[in-house]
Each structure stands twice: as structure tokens, then as C-alpha cells.
Image 1 (cartoon, helix red, strand yellow):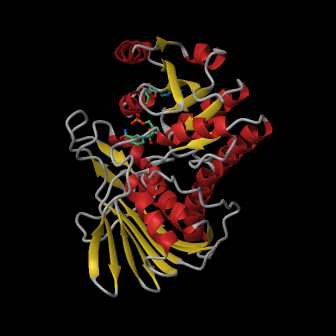
Image 2 (cartoon, rainbow, N blue to C red):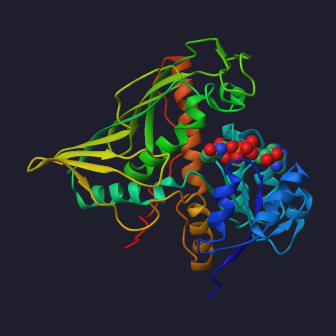
Image 3 (tube, rainbow, N blue to C red):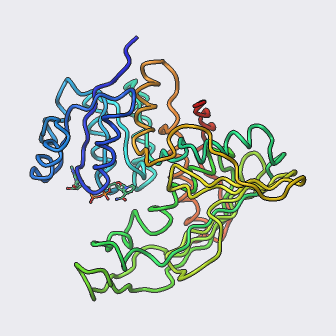
Length: 358
Ligand SMILES: NC(=O)c1ccc[n+]([C@@H]2O[C@H](COP(=O)([O-])OP(=O)(O)OC[C@H]3O[C@@H](n4cnc5c(N)ncnc54)[C@H](O)[C@@H]3O)[C@@H](O)[C@H]2O)c1
């Protein structure tokens, strides 16, 4: 049986370093090449990782490449993912799957029609922290889940990010930039969302950059920066979600799941590790040792799982249906706020299989 798929990285920016490193170590992937619109970035990464520097058309046309991992900014995702699928390649993309739902849907449909795979970050839910939570839930450690909370609170990236403008433009904001981690974690643990209500606002119309490169420049805010939602999961769990760039300080958990017999405290879904904490009647709170495997930064694990799934003829976990459902729920949240109504996502998905890493 074939065991690896040849892989090319598209986009040699900030996040590419960890992907290039992990793609040379994770099973299932044979890293061959990279490409970027800036040839000097391509050349630097190719030299550092001893792979072939290619132009974007060369990468897309290269018959030796089976999977393209797309690490470009969100606005470029759909065009490049569709081009890769048209070129007959499987695609694994950074989040979000696309900026708008039409492009996201088209990407999943084209992959299906062409008998190719599409996968998407985040893949943090495949790490030891969230997989430990999954195991506890499946074993009934908190009984029947009835409710969940998920909070991402902060005051935005303009104090530390070198170029923070895009965080306040279409396709970003706290919901689209960080929301995928929280929503993917929730859906992987609890299943799909069936109904959504929401309220969203841009509390401050302008932001002043205080990081070095663009110090003092003003950003015009074009997206909601505080988004609160109620998520009714298909299994009956009522979820409460806040993603915010408007909060200076808070004492909120990342994610908690409340069950008939206990409470599960879920680690930061933007990481692969712990801590995982469990409350049960007979002992109160205790920290649960993580199951083995991938507690460090394992970005690319979802792509490796996709490659192995292709070889084994099974569904991959960080798949297009899951990513499209998360994209759909994010849009529905804002539409629910705008219309003042509960809304039903057009999409659904199944819970990905647990990792079974002993
Ligand atoms: N930086 C992080 O910490 C981080 C973490 C998780 C996820 N992500 C996601 O990863 C993706 C990339 O983020 P980043 O921080 O690496 O961005 P970045 O701006 O540092 O890098 C993006 C790279 O893509 C290249 N690029 C842009 N348009 C292109 C195109 N049309 N064709 C080919 N290359 C193109 C740019 O030249 C750049 O080198 C985003 O989707 C982001 O949400 C980033």
C-alpha cells in the first residue's frame, strides 16, 4: 500500500516555518517543493529545508506533486484552492476554508466532483489536549453533555502584531480569525450546530497601532469586534460563544462542557496540549494526564492525516465538510445578529473520528 503523498507548500510566510518543519517529520507526507508570490521567500525556505523552489504556476502544474498545502492569507485561499483542485491535486488549506460561503461550498463540491480531497486547518483538535477531552466525553466522564461555553477575549493584535490592519478587515475580526479554533473544537467534541442566535458590534470604530513598524497609524474597523452567540447543537447541548477584541482583561475559561455528572475544562483550542481538567462529584476538580501524542505545536497534522486517509481509503478528520460547517456557522452568527432572529445553518457534518493514538 502506498504510504506517502508528495507535497508542496504554497505561501512561505509567518506560519510556513512550523509547517515545513512538521511536514518533513510527520508520516504520510513527502515534502518536495514550495512557492510564494515573492520569489525571495520561496528561495529562502527552499534552501532552509532542502526542497525545490518553484513559481506558483510551476507548483500547480508539477505532476510530481499530489497535495498542496495552502498557507496564503485568507483572501487568497479560495482562488488558489480551486486552482489546485482544477490541476488535479488534493488541497489542505489554512483557515478559514474561504472567506465567503459560496467559495467554501464550491471548493468542497469541486473536490468531491473531481474525486479529490480538501482538508482545512485548524487541526489542533487532533492534538493530545482536545483528543483527551474527546476520550473523556466518549467514556461518559461528565455524563450527558447539556451545555458548553467558549470564550476568546482580548484587545486585538495592534499592540504586538507587526502589520495588524488585516485583522479589522473583511475575512478577519475575532470571529473569523480565532473563531475557527473554538468552533472546530466544539463541533469535533459535540457534533454539528443546528440553530444559532447572535449579537455583534464594532465597539470602537478606529484602532491605533502601538506595535513598532506602523506605530501611531489608525486602522478603520470594518468588521464586528465583539461577537456573542448562542449555539444550539444538534445533540441538544446549548453553547455560549464570545469572540472579542474589545476586552482588556477577563477571567473567562477557554472552553467548558457541562454534563449531567460533571464538568470538563478544555484547554486553549489554539494549542495542541493541555491542561485538561475534570470535575466529578466524588473528588472535585483534578487534572487529567494527556493521552500520548502531539501535545507540541503539530500544525500540519491534519494534512498528514489526510494523506494517510487517502492511502487507507478512509475519511480524513480535518475535512472540508467540517471546515465548511464552521464557516457557515460563523456567517450565520453575524446574520442572526443583523436580522434579530434565530437562524439554521444550511450545512452539517459528522463528528470526526477520534485519533486512537495510544
Ligand atoms: N501567523 C500565524 O501565527 C498563524 C497561525 C495560524 C494560522 N495562520 C493562518 O495561516 C495563513 C497565513 O498566515 P501567515 O501569518 O503565514 O501570513 P503571512 O502574510 O506571513 O504569509 C502569507 C504568505 O503568502 C504569500 N502570498 C500571499 N498571496 C499569495 C498568493 N496569491 N499566492 C502565493 N502566495 C501568496 C505571501 O507572500 C506570504 O509570504 C492565514 O490563513 C492565517 O489565518 C497563521
